[in-house]
Image (cartoon, rainbow, N blue to C red):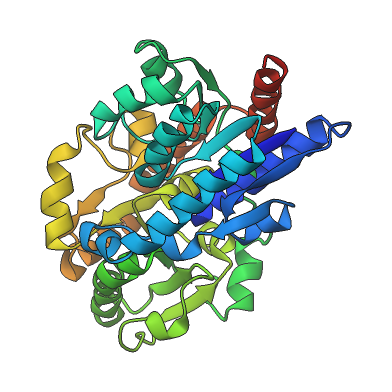
Amino acid sequence: MRLLIVAGEASGDKHGANLVRALRAERPDVEWEIFGAGGGDMRDAGVDIIADVRELAIMGVLEVSRAIGKFLHVFRQLRLAARNRRPDLVILIDWPEFNLRLAKKLHRDGHRVVYYISPQIWAWRSYRINAIKRYVERMLVILPFEANYYAHRGVDVDYTGHPLLDSVMVTASSAEFRNRHGLDVSRPVVALLPGSRHSEIKYILPPLLDAAMILSRKRPEIQFLLALAPTIARDELIGELPDSVKPVYGDTYNAVAASDLAAVASGTATLETAIIGTPLIVVYRASALNWRLFRPLINVPYVGLPNLIAERKIAPELLQDELKGKRLAEEITSLLDDPARLDEQRLALEEVRRRLGEPNASARAARCIIKLLEER
């Protein structure tokens, strides 16, 4: 069986790698030839990476426009590879700005297209449903409400459950982690998660550090962890870190689990935090231009995935102009000083975790794909 798989961000690369391993585990009798676009995780899983797209994990109108040549080059590479190697199925993973355009071209070239991990069209840019209905044979979705959303709009869909349930692993107790990093086990810890994209470091990290500096003077008992993705170089940090902030690289799950509270950039990390069960504040900030362009397109009451899944605001959200050091510092102290409120959020996060379904999502997605291949 020959597959073309395309993922464009760190999370998609991880989910693509898990899907490839699940396919091979489900059907070890099949000789799989899998090629496409992704990063290190998919390469380690045995995918022939013909386009490494880690440099294209960017957001924003200006940022994307500057990299348009790179996007076009990768687009042409993939379309040519599909023509030459004739995959039995094309699997597109998230990354809608690129993948929906690719779906259109590959569908018109005569390829069967499956989409794994839906674009959040239920939240914004809902007009994209028209492209999905035309060019995608089947949607494999990971959030519980997405299956009904697509089914009601005439799209063939399977709900696989969320792959984060298989990949979010806490490997150290709170005491072990705190001792390892020189943190006082008796004092509160707040984790700061500014995101993994360079633009997020630019716009979200400064107010997080401002809040830490304010609280280091007013509430010196609070300890801060700055959980950074391995893709973020130390020299990207803006200015010197306050003494109260301890950077942690590549160990985010343990850092979050060892914390009493986390301030988390909107996106996948908010759901990872929910699965771990640590109370959180959802934060987000972008350039003024990007916010003005995209905010009117958002048609849901919340941006944090835990709030969307719970269908109510269980975690505070500080977005754009609300995300300032003083305001975040106030929200942090308000939560830390109210144990009942923290306990209430922990209970709500347990419900979010239950709504995500059962583990082994990658295996269920693999079985859906195998069934489609057998129907060819």
